[in-house]
Image 1 (cartoon, one colour):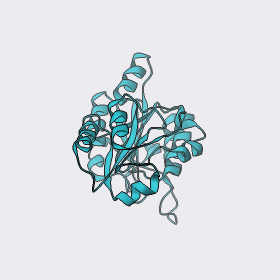
Image 2 (cartoon, rainbow, N blue to C red):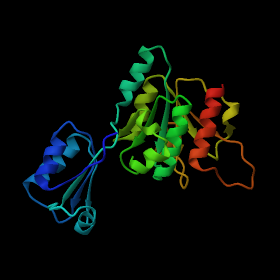
Image 3 (cartoon, rainbow, N blue to C red):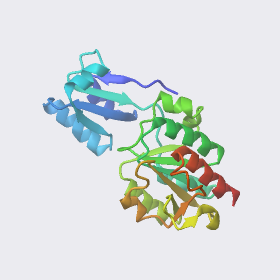
Length: 242
C-alpha cells in the first residue's frame, strides 16, 4: 500500500491531476481564482476527480505548506472499473457477486463490510465518490487489509452504474427493513449485486427504483435495526448459503 500524500500548491496539484496517478479529492479555497485554478477544476471534471470548495482556514489546518488555496490527496488504493471486473469474471466462467454501498459514510462500517465481503467471495465493492466514506488508513486497518485485496470501484454516478450492471444480466437485491420478503424466502442466485444503504436513511429513493428485489432480515421486534456492517454480513452469508 502506498502512503497517502497531500500535495499543496497550484502547480503541484495541476501536475498531479494531469498525471496518471489516482487522486482521492482536491480541496480548493472558496477565495481561490485564476487560470491555474480553472485548469485544475476542468481536469477534475474531465477525469471525474472529486473536488470541493472549502474555507481557506480548512486547507490551512490540513497543511502547513504554501498551499496557495489548493490541496490534493492521492488515493491509498487503486480504484478499479466496474465493467472490467464484470467482464473479467464472465470471461473466466465465474458469475459476479457485487456489493454496492449507498451513502455509507462511516469508515468503520466500510472497513468491517470489506472484511466480510472478502471472506464471502464478493468480486467488487462499489461506492459513489460523493456522500460516501473515504478509504483511508483507518478503514484499511479495520478491514484487516481486505480493502487492499478486494477490488474497490468509486463511481461518479451510482444510478447510471446500477443501470449498467443490470444491462449485464445481473440481478439487483436491496436490503431494506420495510421489504415484504425475508432474504431467505427469495432465490438469491448469482450473478447478483447486493445494495446496502446508510443506517439512518437506508437505500436512497432514486436507487430503490432500480432494485429488482427488496429483502429484509429476520429480527425481533424489540430491535429497530442492525448495524449496516452486520446486516450486510448476514445477507451475504444467506446469498452464499443458497
